[in-house]
Image 1 (cartoon, rainbow, N blue to C red):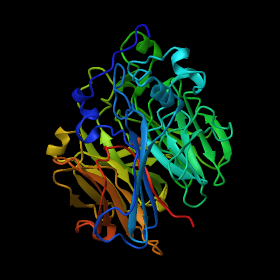
Image 2 (tube, rainbow, N blue to C red):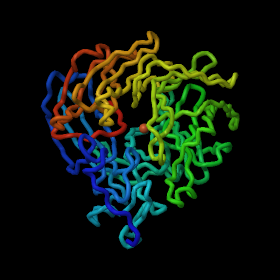
Image 3 (spheres, helix red, strand yellow):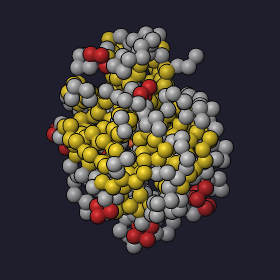
Image 4 (spheres, helix red, strand yellow):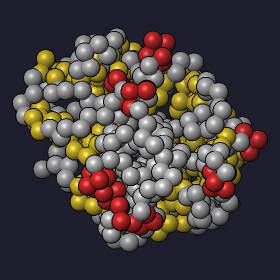
Length: 471
Ligand SMILES: [Fe+2]
């Protein structure tokens, strides 16, 4: 290809080396060695997605948005564990496998191959889809999620079925962080676009059919990067931080993303059930948020808790490192107010709660925390268990290791919020050997209940879920 960006050297890229380095083998192993005892009531699979570039990327590699998706699964039943990992075999990745090299440029250096190289059977638009951010199960479908494009459907055993657009009802795709309402089973989602429509939301019923087709938020007149959102029983809340896309800016070689703090943050409080169009808008100062732990209603207020960032630095040319803190926000739609309260000043990310409480009052949230040593490597080495009622943080340390997002798995027959296990991957930074760790959430700082030895390193990745066996 003429003018094609050159492959980058993975060894020189922090996010393509060490604990982040991709793995290329697809393994199946049963009866993994276990230290401790896997609880008998843990029956199901923990699936986790993350970027895993199969070939040296062309031009640029922007973690965590670039890279082929790879899903790692740990199945637990009767005290035994098995492991399997598979690529999400997008049309683009299949073309690259045929060519034995990367064909598409990174998101900051867009370039597409000629139709002869790509082959005749590609995803619409000629882009390579990147469903490497999250993996969910809804209405018995397993969906590997990208940001703003259609998901790829997988089987429970991680074979790729193909691009999925909800029987044509969501042709433009969805966000990577949809919310499943625990009462109705509905999946609520949004999507931002770099072109019109710039922001939409939609609802998928518990049976997998789209019950509310994409509705445009008309007040948004340009592309904003929005990674996550929150739902409550009555609302969905879209927090629009001032991270903007401009394709004209990108065409001039400045990169497509900019941070424009003078725009402030705008918050759309959208009624989930009432008449359409009655959105309450609330203004706040500029900040950035990747992920919200959860959202819920308390009296007339909407409450959320999240890692607050001073600004977006990822992908923004010349941006200084951001500062962060752990914050709680209270949004009052009637008064039009937004109040922010700092709960802790240490750097955290990847908040998760007991998903049975999605959109409902929540006491506990688990975060990854980076000590100064881990921060140097852009990794995390402690789990924080925040108790929002007591205002305390319990800590579980993983010295010398790098850990991933920690998810909650309920104990059988127990509905209380604290009654469950915390699951995560951990990688020893000296040996680069990974384990799957099971903690008892009711005894959070105690030694793990079980540590499953994995056959090799599982690269640091992004999001996943514990999916209990349904039989
Ligand atoms: Fe995310």
